Length: 616
Ligand code: SF4
Image 1: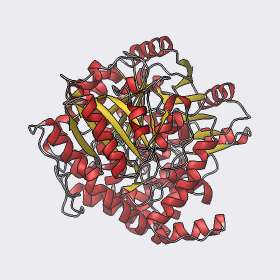
Image 2: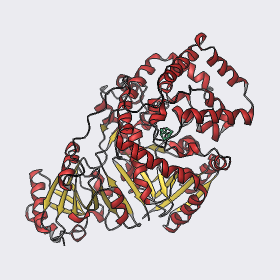
Image 3: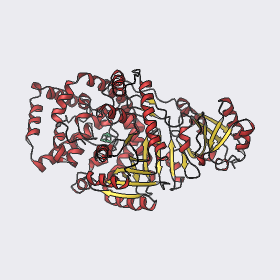
Image 4: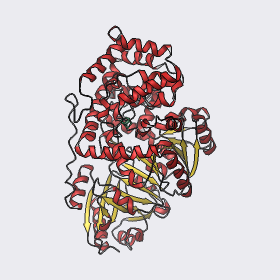
Protein backbone atom coordinates (compact mmCIF):
# COMPACT_ATOMS: atom_id res chain seq x y z
CA UNK A 1 0.00 0.00 0.00
CA UNK A 2 1.72 3.11 -1.28
CA UNK A 3 1.77 6.20 0.95
CA UNK A 4 2.54 8.81 -1.70
CA UNK A 5 -0.41 8.23 -4.01
CA UNK A 6 -3.04 10.94 -4.57
CA UNK A 7 -6.24 10.67 -2.51
CA UNK A 8 -8.96 8.47 -3.97
CA UNK A 9 -11.04 11.32 -5.34
CA UNK A 10 -8.10 12.85 -7.19
CA UNK A 11 -7.00 9.44 -8.47
CA UNK A 12 -10.52 8.85 -9.83
CA UNK A 13 -10.40 12.22 -11.64
CA UNK A 14 -7.12 11.29 -13.30
CA UNK A 15 -8.35 7.81 -14.23
CA UNK A 16 -11.50 9.19 -15.84
CA UNK A 17 -9.41 11.37 -18.13
CA UNK A 18 -7.49 8.37 -19.46
CA UNK A 19 -10.03 7.30 -22.08
CA UNK A 20 -7.72 4.83 -23.82
CA UNK A 21 -6.92 2.84 -20.67
CA UNK A 22 -10.62 2.80 -19.79
CA UNK A 23 -11.43 1.27 -23.17
CA UNK A 24 -8.84 -1.49 -22.71
CA UNK A 25 -10.05 -2.14 -19.18
CA UNK A 26 -13.66 -2.36 -20.30
CA UNK A 27 -12.79 -4.78 -23.09
CA UNK A 28 -10.70 -7.10 -20.87
CA UNK A 29 -13.17 -7.13 -18.00
CA UNK A 30 -16.25 -7.66 -20.14
CA UNK A 31 -14.52 -10.77 -21.54
CA UNK A 32 -13.87 -12.02 -18.03
CA UNK A 33 -17.31 -10.97 -16.78
CA UNK A 34 -19.07 -13.36 -19.17
CA UNK A 35 -17.06 -16.28 -17.79
CA UNK A 36 -17.46 -15.30 -14.16
CA UNK A 37 -21.23 -14.66 -14.33
CA UNK A 38 -21.74 -17.94 -16.15
CA UNK A 39 -19.73 -19.80 -13.49
CA UNK A 40 -21.46 -18.21 -10.51
CA UNK A 41 -25.13 -17.97 -11.47
CA UNK A 42 -26.13 -21.46 -12.70
CA UNK A 43 -28.05 -23.99 -10.58
CA UNK A 44 -24.93 -25.89 -9.51
CA UNK A 45 -23.38 -22.55 -8.57
CA UNK A 46 -26.26 -21.75 -6.21
CA UNK A 47 -25.66 -24.98 -4.28
CA UNK A 48 -21.94 -24.28 -4.17
CA UNK A 49 -22.48 -20.71 -3.00
CA UNK A 50 -24.82 -21.84 -0.23
CA UNK A 51 -22.17 -24.29 1.01
CA UNK A 52 -19.41 -21.70 0.78
CA UNK A 53 -21.48 -19.11 2.65
CA UNK A 54 -22.14 -21.60 5.40
CA UNK A 55 -18.43 -22.52 5.73
CA UNK A 56 -17.25 -18.92 5.71
CA UNK A 57 -19.91 -17.72 8.15
CA UNK A 58 -19.13 -20.54 10.57
CA UNK A 59 -15.39 -19.89 10.19
CA UNK A 60 -15.62 -16.20 10.94
CA UNK A 61 -17.82 -16.88 13.99
CA UNK A 62 -15.18 -19.25 15.36
CA UNK A 63 -12.20 -17.24 14.14
CA UNK A 64 -10.24 -16.92 17.43
CA UNK A 65 -10.59 -20.64 18.24
CA UNK A 66 -9.72 -21.79 14.72
CA UNK A 67 -6.79 -19.43 14.58
CA UNK A 68 -5.41 -20.87 17.82
CA UNK A 69 -5.97 -24.42 16.59
CA UNK A 70 -4.10 -23.67 13.36
CA UNK A 71 -1.07 -22.38 15.23
CA UNK A 72 -0.88 -25.63 17.19
CA UNK A 73 -1.45 -28.03 14.27
CA UNK A 74 0.89 -26.20 11.88
CA UNK A 75 3.63 -26.16 14.53
CA UNK A 76 3.13 -29.88 15.14
CA UNK A 77 3.70 -30.43 11.40
CA UNK A 78 7.13 -28.79 11.65
CA UNK A 79 6.03 -25.43 10.22
CA UNK A 80 7.41 -22.43 12.10
CA UNK A 81 4.51 -20.14 12.91
CA UNK A 82 4.89 -16.42 13.51
CA UNK A 83 1.90 -14.19 14.38
CA UNK A 84 2.10 -10.47 13.73
CA UNK A 85 -0.29 -7.62 14.45
CA UNK A 86 0.91 -4.93 12.05
CA UNK A 87 2.62 -4.59 8.65
CA UNK A 88 5.74 -3.32 10.44
CA UNK A 89 5.84 -6.48 12.56
CA UNK A 90 5.33 -8.59 9.44
CA UNK A 91 8.30 -6.95 7.72
CA UNK A 92 10.43 -7.40 10.86
CA UNK A 93 9.48 -11.08 10.84
CA UNK A 94 10.44 -11.46 7.13
CA UNK A 95 13.79 -9.75 7.81
CA UNK A 96 14.47 -12.20 10.64
CA UNK A 97 13.82 -15.21 8.43
CA UNK A 98 15.23 -14.26 5.03
CA UNK A 99 18.93 -14.05 4.37
CA UNK A 100 20.19 -10.87 2.67
CA UNK A 101 22.43 -12.92 0.43
CA UNK A 102 19.64 -14.89 -1.22
CA UNK A 103 17.45 -13.62 -4.04
CA UNK A 104 13.83 -13.95 -2.93
CA UNK A 105 11.10 -15.13 -5.30
CA UNK A 106 7.72 -13.58 -4.65
CA UNK A 107 4.15 -13.07 -5.78
CA UNK A 108 2.99 -9.51 -5.15
CA UNK A 109 -0.58 -10.32 -4.27
CA UNK A 110 -3.20 -9.96 -1.51
CA UNK A 111 -1.71 -10.01 1.97
CA UNK A 112 1.82 -9.31 0.68
CA UNK A 113 0.57 -6.17 -1.04
CA UNK A 114 -1.32 -5.26 2.12
CA UNK A 115 1.86 -5.24 4.22
CA UNK A 116 3.84 -3.65 1.37
CA UNK A 117 6.36 -6.51 1.44
CA UNK A 118 7.83 -5.90 -2.02
CA UNK A 119 8.88 -2.28 -1.47
CA UNK A 120 9.87 -2.82 2.17
CA UNK A 121 12.18 -5.74 1.36
CA UNK A 122 13.69 -3.91 -1.60
CA UNK A 123 14.44 -0.92 0.62
CA UNK A 124 16.24 -3.30 2.97
CA UNK A 125 18.47 -4.38 0.08
CA UNK A 126 16.83 -7.67 -0.87
CA UNK A 127 16.72 -8.79 -4.50
CA UNK A 128 13.06 -9.59 -5.27
CA UNK A 129 12.24 -11.93 -8.16
CA UNK A 130 8.71 -11.92 -9.57
CA UNK A 131 7.02 -15.26 -10.17
CA UNK A 132 3.89 -13.93 -11.87
CA UNK A 133 4.04 -12.61 -15.42
CA UNK A 134 1.82 -9.60 -14.68
CA UNK A 135 3.88 -8.61 -11.62
CA UNK A 136 7.09 -8.82 -13.63
CA UNK A 137 5.74 -6.57 -16.37
CA UNK A 138 4.28 -3.99 -13.96
CA UNK A 139 7.53 -3.73 -12.02
CA UNK A 140 9.44 -3.41 -15.29
CA UNK A 141 7.35 -0.46 -16.48
CA UNK A 142 6.73 0.93 -12.94
CA UNK A 143 2.99 0.70 -13.21
CA UNK A 144 0.24 -0.63 -10.93
CA UNK A 145 -2.41 -3.35 -11.17
CA UNK A 146 -5.64 -2.61 -12.97
CA UNK A 147 -7.38 -5.69 -11.55
CA UNK A 148 -6.32 -8.58 -9.28
CA UNK A 149 -6.77 -11.30 -11.95
CA UNK A 150 -6.05 -9.18 -15.04
CA UNK A 151 -3.34 -6.85 -13.77
CA UNK A 152 -2.51 -5.60 -17.30
CA UNK A 153 -6.15 -5.03 -18.30
CA UNK A 154 -5.56 -1.30 -18.90
CA UNK A 155 -2.91 -1.94 -21.57
CA UNK A 156 -3.28 -3.06 -25.17
CA UNK A 157 -0.92 -5.63 -26.66
CA UNK A 158 0.61 -2.78 -28.65
CA UNK A 159 1.20 -0.81 -25.39
CA UNK A 160 2.85 -3.87 -23.85
CA UNK A 161 5.05 -4.52 -26.89
CA UNK A 162 6.19 -0.89 -27.05
CA UNK A 163 6.84 -0.70 -23.30
CA UNK A 164 8.84 -3.95 -23.41
CA UNK A 165 10.99 -2.71 -26.29
CA UNK A 166 11.60 0.66 -24.61
CA UNK A 167 12.53 -0.78 -21.20
CA UNK A 168 14.55 -3.82 -22.27
CA UNK A 169 15.98 -2.65 -25.60
CA UNK A 170 14.70 -5.82 -27.28
CA UNK A 171 12.05 -5.55 -29.97
CA UNK A 172 9.04 -7.77 -29.53
CA UNK A 173 5.97 -8.48 -31.63
CA UNK A 174 2.79 -7.10 -30.03
CA UNK A 175 1.07 -10.48 -29.80
CA UNK A 176 -0.05 -12.37 -26.69
CA UNK A 177 2.21 -15.34 -27.56
CA UNK A 178 5.31 -13.19 -28.02
CA UNK A 179 4.69 -11.18 -24.85
CA UNK A 180 4.05 -14.31 -22.77
CA UNK A 181 7.18 -15.97 -24.21
CA UNK A 182 9.31 -12.93 -23.35
CA UNK A 183 7.89 -12.63 -19.82
CA UNK A 184 8.16 -16.38 -19.26
CA UNK A 185 11.87 -16.31 -20.14
CA UNK A 186 12.45 -13.71 -17.40
CA UNK A 187 10.30 -15.53 -14.85
CA UNK A 188 11.99 -18.85 -15.64
CA UNK A 189 15.35 -17.20 -14.90
CA UNK A 190 13.86 -15.92 -11.62
CA UNK A 191 12.82 -19.45 -10.64
CA UNK A 192 16.37 -20.71 -11.31
CA UNK A 193 17.98 -17.91 -9.31
CA UNK A 194 15.74 -18.01 -6.23
CA UNK A 195 17.09 -19.51 -3.02
CA UNK A 196 14.14 -18.49 -0.85
CA UNK A 197 10.57 -17.41 -1.51
CA UNK A 198 7.88 -15.35 0.14
CA UNK A 199 4.41 -16.09 -1.15
CA UNK A 200 0.79 -15.61 -0.06
CA UNK A 201 -1.29 -18.62 1.08
CA UNK A 202 -4.86 -19.04 -0.12
CA UNK A 203 -5.95 -20.90 3.01
CA UNK A 204 -4.67 -22.94 5.97
CA UNK A 205 -6.57 -25.79 7.60
CA UNK A 206 -7.04 -25.56 11.39
CA UNK A 207 -7.76 -29.28 11.78
CA UNK A 208 -4.58 -30.54 10.08
CA UNK A 209 -2.24 -27.51 9.94
CA UNK A 210 -2.14 -27.83 6.12
CA UNK A 211 -1.17 -24.77 4.04
CA UNK A 212 -3.00 -24.38 0.72
CA UNK A 213 -1.48 -22.59 -2.28
CA UNK A 214 -3.38 -21.91 -5.51
CA UNK A 215 -1.75 -21.16 -8.84
CA UNK A 216 -2.71 -21.00 -12.50
CA UNK A 217 0.53 -19.83 -14.09
CA UNK A 218 2.47 -22.92 -12.99
CA UNK A 219 5.37 -21.18 -11.22
CA UNK A 220 4.55 -22.08 -7.62
CA UNK A 221 5.09 -25.83 -7.77
CA UNK A 222 8.65 -25.51 -9.18
CA UNK A 223 9.58 -22.79 -6.69
CA UNK A 224 8.40 -24.57 -3.54
CA UNK A 225 10.36 -27.64 -4.58
CA UNK A 226 13.45 -25.61 -5.26
CA UNK A 227 14.04 -23.12 -2.44
CA UNK A 228 15.59 -23.84 0.95
CA UNK A 229 13.47 -21.30 2.84
CA UNK A 230 9.81 -20.74 2.16
CA UNK A 231 7.90 -17.93 3.89
CA UNK A 232 4.16 -18.26 3.47
CA UNK A 233 2.02 -15.31 4.53
CA UNK A 234 -1.69 -15.32 5.29
CA UNK A 235 -4.32 -13.05 6.85
CA UNK A 236 -5.79 -14.72 9.95
CA UNK A 237 -9.27 -14.73 8.37
CA UNK A 238 -8.19 -17.28 5.72
CA UNK A 239 -8.21 -20.17 8.16
CA UNK A 240 -10.49 -23.09 7.17
CA UNK A 241 -11.94 -25.44 9.83
CA UNK A 242 -11.35 -28.85 8.19
CA UNK A 243 -9.85 -30.38 5.06
CA UNK A 244 -13.38 -31.42 4.03
CA UNK A 245 -14.36 -27.71 3.91
CA UNK A 246 -11.61 -26.88 1.42
CA UNK A 247 -12.91 -28.13 -1.98
CA UNK A 248 -15.96 -25.83 -2.20
CA UNK A 249 -13.84 -22.83 -1.21
CA UNK A 250 -11.25 -23.54 -3.91
CA UNK A 251 -13.98 -24.07 -6.49
CA UNK A 252 -15.70 -20.82 -5.51
CA UNK A 253 -12.38 -18.97 -5.77
CA UNK A 254 -11.77 -20.41 -9.24
CA UNK A 255 -15.27 -19.57 -10.44
CA UNK A 256 -15.11 -16.04 -9.04
CA UNK A 257 -11.59 -15.33 -10.27
CA UNK A 258 -11.72 -16.64 -13.83
CA UNK A 259 -14.89 -18.61 -14.40
CA UNK A 260 -13.31 -22.07 -14.21
CA UNK A 261 -14.00 -24.78 -11.61
CA UNK A 262 -10.40 -25.37 -10.53
CA UNK A 263 -6.98 -23.78 -10.47
CA UNK A 264 -4.37 -25.38 -12.72
CA UNK A 265 -2.34 -26.27 -9.63
CA UNK A 266 -3.28 -26.61 -5.97
CA UNK A 267 -0.54 -27.38 -3.47
CA UNK A 268 -1.20 -28.83 -0.02
CA UNK A 269 1.75 -28.55 2.35
CA UNK A 270 1.22 -30.75 5.40
CA UNK A 271 4.69 -31.64 6.64
CA UNK A 272 7.30 -29.80 4.59
CA UNK A 273 10.68 -31.21 3.72
CA UNK A 274 12.33 -27.77 3.82
CA UNK A 275 12.36 -24.78 6.15
CA UNK A 276 8.76 -23.43 6.02
CA UNK A 277 7.51 -20.43 7.98
CA UNK A 278 3.86 -19.46 8.20
CA UNK A 279 3.38 -15.76 9.02
CA UNK A 280 -0.17 -15.03 10.20
CA UNK A 281 -1.14 -11.37 9.86
CA UNK A 282 -3.89 -9.78 11.96
CA UNK A 283 -3.60 -6.10 10.89
CA UNK A 284 -6.87 -5.06 12.65
CA UNK A 285 -8.97 -8.09 11.73
CA UNK A 286 -9.33 -9.27 15.29
CA UNK A 287 -10.57 -5.75 16.26
CA UNK A 288 -13.16 -5.91 13.47
CA UNK A 289 -14.30 -9.25 14.83
CA UNK A 290 -14.55 -7.87 18.41
CA UNK A 291 -16.49 -4.80 17.25
CA UNK A 292 -19.08 -6.91 15.42
CA UNK A 293 -18.04 -5.92 11.86
CA UNK A 294 -16.76 -9.35 10.92
CA UNK A 295 -19.09 -10.09 7.93
CA UNK A 296 -16.74 -8.76 5.18
CA UNK A 297 -13.95 -10.95 6.56
CA UNK A 298 -15.79 -13.79 4.80
CA UNK A 299 -14.41 -12.41 1.50
CA UNK A 300 -12.36 -14.93 -0.52
CA UNK A 301 -10.63 -12.19 -2.56
CA UNK A 302 -11.85 -13.80 -5.77
CA UNK A 303 -12.33 -10.38 -7.47
CA UNK A 304 -15.72 -11.31 -8.99
CA UNK A 305 -17.31 -8.18 -7.50
CA UNK A 306 -14.68 -5.96 -9.16
CA UNK A 307 -15.08 -7.79 -12.47
CA UNK A 308 -18.82 -7.13 -12.68
CA UNK A 309 -18.87 -3.64 -11.07
CA UNK A 310 -19.57 -0.93 -13.72
CA UNK A 311 -18.11 1.85 -11.55
CA UNK A 312 -14.88 -0.12 -11.07
CA UNK A 313 -14.62 -0.61 -14.80
CA UNK A 314 -14.70 3.15 -15.32
CA UNK A 315 -11.59 3.71 -13.20
CA UNK A 316 -9.61 0.48 -12.62
CA UNK A 317 -7.77 -0.79 -9.56
CA UNK A 318 -4.95 1.78 -9.53
CA UNK A 319 -7.16 4.38 -7.78
CA UNK A 320 -7.64 2.30 -4.61
CA UNK A 321 -4.15 2.15 -3.13
CA UNK A 322 -4.99 -1.19 -1.50
CA UNK A 323 -5.18 -4.73 -2.94
CA UNK A 324 -8.91 -4.77 -2.11
CA UNK A 325 -10.55 -3.30 -5.22
CA UNK A 326 -14.05 -2.88 -6.53
CA UNK A 327 -17.05 -3.20 -4.17
CA UNK A 328 -15.14 -5.02 -1.39
CA UNK A 329 -12.55 -2.23 -1.60
CA UNK A 330 -15.22 0.22 -0.41
CA UNK A 331 -15.95 -1.91 2.66
CA UNK A 332 -12.89 -3.71 4.05
CA UNK A 333 -10.21 -0.98 3.90
CA UNK A 334 -12.38 1.73 5.54
CA UNK A 335 -13.38 -0.69 8.29
CA UNK A 336 -9.90 -2.11 8.84
CA UNK A 337 -7.87 1.07 8.43
CA UNK A 338 -10.24 4.06 8.69
CA UNK A 339 -7.38 6.51 9.26
CA UNK A 340 -6.16 5.92 5.71
CA UNK A 341 -9.17 4.71 3.76
CA UNK A 342 -12.28 6.40 5.21
CA UNK A 343 -12.83 8.11 1.85
CA UNK A 344 -13.29 4.79 0.06
CA UNK A 345 -16.54 4.08 1.94
CA UNK A 346 -18.14 7.02 0.14
CA UNK A 347 -16.69 6.49 -3.32
CA UNK A 348 -19.13 4.03 -4.90
CA UNK A 349 -22.76 3.78 -5.93
CA UNK A 350 -24.71 1.42 -3.68
CA UNK A 351 -26.24 -0.53 -6.54
CA UNK A 352 -25.83 -4.13 -5.33
CA UNK A 353 -24.98 -5.46 -8.81
CA UNK A 354 -22.16 -7.52 -7.31
CA UNK A 355 -24.56 -9.25 -4.88
CA UNK A 356 -25.50 -11.55 -7.77
CA UNK A 357 -22.01 -13.02 -8.03
CA UNK A 358 -20.35 -12.83 -4.62
CA UNK A 359 -19.74 -16.49 -3.67
CA UNK A 360 -19.82 -15.74 0.06
CA UNK A 361 -23.13 -13.88 -0.21
CA UNK A 362 -22.06 -10.39 0.84
CA UNK A 363 -24.81 -7.77 0.62
CA UNK A 364 -22.80 -4.85 -0.73
CA UNK A 365 -25.27 -1.93 -0.27
CA UNK A 366 -25.89 -2.94 3.36
CA UNK A 367 -22.18 -3.37 4.11
CA UNK A 368 -21.20 -0.13 2.40
CA UNK A 369 -23.87 1.67 4.49
CA UNK A 370 -22.37 0.05 7.62
CA UNK A 371 -18.86 1.07 6.62
CA UNK A 372 -20.04 4.66 6.10
CA UNK A 373 -21.79 4.72 9.46
CA UNK A 374 -18.67 3.27 11.09
CA UNK A 375 -16.40 5.88 9.56
CA UNK A 376 -18.79 8.75 10.44
CA UNK A 377 -19.21 7.59 14.00
CA UNK A 378 -15.49 7.03 14.46
CA UNK A 379 -14.13 10.19 12.98
CA UNK A 380 -16.89 12.53 11.96
CA UNK A 381 -16.96 13.24 8.23
CA UNK A 382 -13.71 14.93 7.14
CA UNK A 383 -13.80 17.82 4.70
CA UNK A 384 -12.51 15.75 1.80
CA UNK A 385 -15.38 13.30 2.12
CA UNK A 386 -17.91 16.12 2.49
CA UNK A 387 -16.57 17.51 -0.78
CA UNK A 388 -16.88 14.06 -2.33
CA UNK A 389 -20.46 13.70 -1.15
CA UNK A 390 -21.23 17.14 -2.60
CA UNK A 391 -19.83 15.95 -5.88
CA UNK A 392 -22.17 13.01 -5.69
CA UNK A 393 -25.17 15.16 -4.77
CA UNK A 394 -24.49 17.62 -7.62
CA UNK A 395 -23.53 14.87 -9.97
CA UNK A 396 -24.78 16.49 -13.17
CA UNK A 397 -22.22 19.32 -12.81
CA UNK A 398 -19.22 17.12 -12.24
CA UNK A 399 -17.61 14.46 -14.47
CA UNK A 400 -17.03 11.97 -11.67
CA UNK A 401 -20.45 12.60 -10.19
CA UNK A 402 -22.04 12.29 -13.65
CA UNK A 403 -20.53 8.87 -14.20
CA UNK A 404 -21.09 7.49 -10.73
CA UNK A 405 -24.59 8.96 -10.56
CA UNK A 406 -25.48 7.54 -13.96
CA UNK A 407 -24.10 4.15 -13.06
CA UNK A 408 -25.74 4.18 -9.65
CA UNK A 409 -29.07 5.29 -11.10
CA UNK A 410 -28.98 2.74 -13.87
CA UNK A 411 -28.14 0.07 -11.39
CA UNK A 412 -30.91 1.09 -9.03
CA UNK A 413 -33.41 1.08 -11.84
CA UNK A 414 -32.45 -2.46 -12.75
CA UNK A 415 -33.14 -5.32 -10.36
CA UNK A 416 -29.89 -5.68 -8.40
CA UNK A 417 -29.98 -9.41 -7.78
CA UNK A 418 -29.48 -10.53 -11.35
CA UNK A 419 -29.75 -14.28 -11.77
CA UNK A 420 -28.11 -15.34 -15.02
CA UNK A 421 -26.23 -13.38 -17.61
CA UNK A 422 -27.49 -9.82 -18.23
CA UNK A 423 -28.21 -8.90 -21.85
CA UNK A 424 -25.24 -6.55 -22.00
CA UNK A 425 -22.73 -9.23 -20.99
CA UNK A 426 -20.88 -11.15 -23.65
CA UNK A 427 -21.96 -14.75 -24.09
CA UNK A 428 -20.33 -17.27 -21.75
CA UNK A 429 -17.49 -19.36 -23.11
CA UNK A 430 -18.43 -22.69 -24.66
CA UNK A 431 -18.80 -25.21 -21.87
CA UNK A 432 -16.30 -28.05 -21.56
CA UNK A 433 -17.59 -30.95 -23.64
CA UNK A 434 -17.30 -33.28 -20.68
CA UNK A 435 -19.55 -36.26 -20.26
CA UNK A 436 -21.90 -36.10 -17.26
CA UNK A 437 -20.73 -37.45 -13.91
CA UNK A 438 -23.03 -40.46 -14.45
CA UNK A 439 -20.79 -41.60 -17.35
CA UNK A 440 -18.17 -44.26 -16.66
CA UNK A 441 -15.20 -42.75 -14.81
CA UNK A 442 -12.74 -43.44 -17.62
CA UNK A 443 -14.96 -42.04 -20.35
CA UNK A 444 -15.63 -38.96 -18.27
CA UNK A 445 -11.91 -38.44 -17.58
CA UNK A 446 -11.17 -38.82 -21.28
CA UNK A 447 -13.83 -36.24 -22.20
CA UNK A 448 -12.58 -33.83 -19.54
CA UNK A 449 -8.97 -34.20 -20.58
CA UNK A 450 -9.24 -34.13 -24.34
CA UNK A 451 -9.54 -30.31 -24.52
CA UNK A 452 -6.46 -30.04 -22.26
CA UNK A 453 -4.39 -32.24 -24.57
CA UNK A 454 -4.06 -34.96 -21.92
CA UNK A 455 -4.34 -38.66 -22.76
CA UNK A 456 -5.36 -41.86 -21.01
CA UNK A 457 -4.41 -45.52 -21.49
CA UNK A 458 -5.92 -48.38 -19.49
CA UNK A 459 -3.89 -51.53 -18.85
CA UNK A 460 -4.63 -54.78 -17.06
CA UNK A 461 -1.36 -55.10 -15.23
CA UNK A 462 2.05 -53.51 -14.67
CA UNK A 463 3.70 -55.51 -17.46
CA UNK A 464 1.17 -54.30 -20.02
CA UNK A 465 1.50 -50.78 -18.60
CA UNK A 466 5.27 -50.99 -19.15
CA UNK A 467 4.76 -51.93 -22.80
CA UNK A 468 2.32 -49.05 -23.25
CA UNK A 469 4.82 -46.68 -21.71
CA UNK A 470 7.64 -47.86 -23.99
CA UNK A 471 5.54 -47.60 -27.12
CA UNK A 472 4.46 -44.07 -26.10
CA UNK A 473 8.11 -43.05 -25.69
CA UNK A 474 9.11 -44.59 -29.03
CA UNK A 475 6.17 -43.02 -30.83
CA UNK A 476 7.18 -39.57 -29.51
CA UNK A 477 10.94 -40.14 -30.09
CA UNK A 478 11.73 -39.58 -26.41
CA UNK A 479 15.21 -40.83 -25.43
CA UNK A 480 15.19 -39.92 -21.71
CA UNK A 481 12.93 -40.71 -18.78
CA UNK A 482 13.31 -39.06 -15.39
CA UNK A 483 11.29 -40.99 -12.85
CA UNK A 484 10.74 -42.16 -9.35
CA UNK A 485 12.28 -45.48 -8.35
CA UNK A 486 10.67 -48.23 -10.50
CA UNK A 487 9.22 -49.95 -7.41
CA UNK A 488 7.63 -46.63 -6.32
CA UNK A 489 5.62 -46.53 -9.55
CA UNK A 490 4.95 -50.28 -9.61
CA UNK A 491 7.36 -50.96 -12.53
CA UNK A 492 10.23 -53.10 -11.40
CA UNK A 493 12.70 -53.77 -14.21
CA UNK A 494 11.74 -50.65 -16.16
CA UNK A 495 15.29 -49.18 -16.51
CA UNK A 496 16.51 -52.43 -18.07
CA UNK A 497 13.51 -52.65 -20.40
CA UNK A 498 14.09 -49.04 -21.50
CA UNK A 499 17.80 -49.65 -22.06
CA UNK A 500 16.90 -52.53 -24.39
CA UNK A 501 15.20 -50.07 -26.74
CA UNK A 502 17.80 -47.30 -26.38
CA UNK A 503 15.97 -45.11 -23.88
CA UNK A 504 17.93 -43.83 -20.89
CA UNK A 505 16.49 -43.98 -17.38
CA UNK A 506 17.40 -41.28 -14.77
CA UNK A 507 16.40 -41.55 -11.15
CA UNK A 508 14.65 -38.32 -10.08
CA UNK A 509 16.17 -38.58 -6.58
CA UNK A 510 19.56 -37.70 -8.12
CA UNK A 511 18.02 -34.49 -9.55
CA UNK A 512 19.56 -35.13 -12.99
CA UNK A 513 20.15 -32.41 -15.53
CA UNK A 514 18.76 -33.64 -18.85
CA UNK A 515 19.08 -31.15 -21.67
CA UNK A 516 17.15 -33.10 -24.31
CA UNK A 517 13.36 -33.42 -24.18
CA UNK A 518 12.39 -35.98 -21.59
CA UNK A 519 9.31 -37.33 -19.91
CA UNK A 520 8.74 -37.52 -16.19
CA UNK A 521 7.33 -40.67 -14.60
CA UNK A 522 5.44 -40.55 -11.30
CA UNK A 523 2.59 -42.31 -9.55
CA UNK A 524 -0.63 -40.57 -8.49
CA UNK A 525 -2.21 -40.93 -5.06
CA UNK A 526 -5.63 -40.32 -6.61
CA UNK A 527 -7.42 -38.96 -9.69
CA UNK A 528 -10.87 -37.36 -9.46
CA UNK A 529 -13.53 -37.74 -12.13
CA UNK A 530 -15.42 -34.61 -11.03
CA UNK A 531 -12.88 -32.26 -12.58
CA UNK A 532 -10.00 -34.51 -13.66
CA UNK A 533 -7.57 -33.54 -10.91
CA UNK A 534 -4.42 -35.67 -10.56
CA UNK A 535 -3.07 -35.76 -6.99
CA UNK A 536 0.65 -36.49 -6.67
CA UNK A 537 2.60 -36.85 -3.47
CA UNK A 538 5.94 -35.10 -3.17
CA UNK A 539 8.54 -36.48 -0.78
CA UNK A 540 12.31 -36.82 -0.53
CA UNK A 541 12.25 -40.27 -2.17
CA UNK A 542 9.54 -39.20 -4.63
CA UNK A 543 10.76 -35.74 -5.74
CA UNK A 544 8.67 -33.62 -8.06
CA UNK A 545 11.21 -30.86 -8.75
CA UNK A 546 12.69 -32.39 -11.95
CA UNK A 547 9.19 -33.15 -13.24
CA UNK A 548 8.42 -29.47 -13.81
CA UNK A 549 11.02 -29.40 -16.57
CA UNK A 550 9.50 -32.38 -18.38
CA UNK A 551 7.52 -31.73 -21.56
CA UNK A 552 5.26 -34.64 -20.71
CA UNK A 553 4.42 -36.19 -17.39
CA UNK A 554 3.41 -39.84 -17.38
CA UNK A 555 1.35 -40.68 -14.32
CA UNK A 556 0.67 -44.24 -13.21
CA UNK A 557 -2.43 -44.78 -11.12
CA UNK A 558 -4.21 -47.82 -9.77
CA UNK A 559 -7.82 -48.13 -10.90
CA UNK A 560 -9.12 -48.09 -7.33
CA UNK A 561 -7.47 -44.69 -6.82
CA UNK A 562 -9.84 -43.08 -9.33
CA UNK A 563 -12.48 -41.47 -7.12
CA UNK A 564 -15.42 -39.15 -7.82
CA UNK A 565 -14.52 -35.94 -5.97
CA UNK A 566 -11.81 -33.98 -4.25
CA UNK A 567 -13.58 -34.67 -0.97
CA UNK A 568 -13.25 -38.44 -1.57
CA UNK A 569 -9.58 -38.08 -2.43
CA UNK A 570 -8.71 -35.79 0.49
CA UNK A 571 -10.45 -38.08 2.97
CA UNK A 572 -8.02 -40.93 2.17
CA UNK A 573 -4.79 -38.95 1.77
CA UNK A 574 -2.38 -39.07 4.68
CA UNK A 575 -1.99 -35.70 6.37
CA UNK A 576 1.77 -35.76 5.95
CA UNK A 577 4.09 -34.70 3.14
CA UNK A 578 3.18 -32.28 0.37
CA UNK A 579 0.67 -32.92 -2.39
CA UNK A 580 0.49 -31.26 -5.78
CA UNK A 581 -2.93 -31.34 -7.45
CA UNK A 582 -2.75 -30.87 -11.22
CA UNK A 583 -6.06 -30.00 -12.89
CA UNK A 584 -5.13 -28.15 -16.06
CA UNK A 585 -2.27 -26.95 -18.19
CA UNK A 586 -0.67 -23.83 -16.70
CA UNK A 587 -2.12 -20.59 -18.07
CA UNK A 588 -2.46 -16.90 -17.32
CA UNK A 589 -5.32 -14.41 -17.50
CA UNK A 590 -2.99 -11.47 -16.81
CA UNK A 591 -2.99 -9.90 -20.26
CA UNK A 592 -6.57 -9.53 -21.37
CA UNK A 593 -8.87 -11.71 -19.24
CA UNK A 594 -8.52 -14.67 -21.62
CA UNK A 595 -6.56 -17.82 -20.70
CA UNK A 596 -3.18 -18.05 -22.46
CA UNK A 597 -0.88 -21.08 -21.92
CA UNK A 598 2.36 -20.55 -20.00
CA UNK A 599 5.38 -22.85 -20.34
CA UNK A 600 5.86 -23.71 -16.65
CA UNK A 601 5.37 -27.35 -15.75
CA UNK A 602 4.46 -30.27 -18.01
CA UNK A 603 2.49 -29.32 -21.10
CA UNK A 604 1.14 -32.83 -21.64
CA UNK A 605 -0.06 -35.35 -19.14
CA UNK A 606 -0.52 -39.02 -19.93
CA UNK A 607 -2.29 -41.26 -17.45
CA UNK A 608 -1.68 -45.02 -17.42
CA UNK A 609 -4.35 -46.76 -15.37
CA UNK A 610 -3.54 -50.18 -13.97
CA UNK A 611 -6.54 -52.30 -13.12
CA UNK A 612 -6.59 -52.69 -9.36
CA UNK A 613 -6.89 -56.47 -9.15
CA UNK A 614 -3.62 -56.89 -11.06
CA UNK A 615 -1.66 -53.93 -9.68
CA UNK A 616 1.48 -54.94 -7.83
S1 SF4 B 1 -16.53 -9.65 -1.80
FE1 SF4 B 1 -15.84 -9.67 -3.93
S2 SF4 B 1 -13.80 -10.54 -3.85
FE2 SF4 B 1 -14.80 -11.04 -1.90
S3 SF4 B 1 -15.71 -13.06 -2.21
FE3 SF4 B 1 -17.30 -11.55 -2.68
S4 SF4 B 1 -17.09 -11.26 -4.92
FE4 SF4 B 1 -15.21 -12.27 -4.23
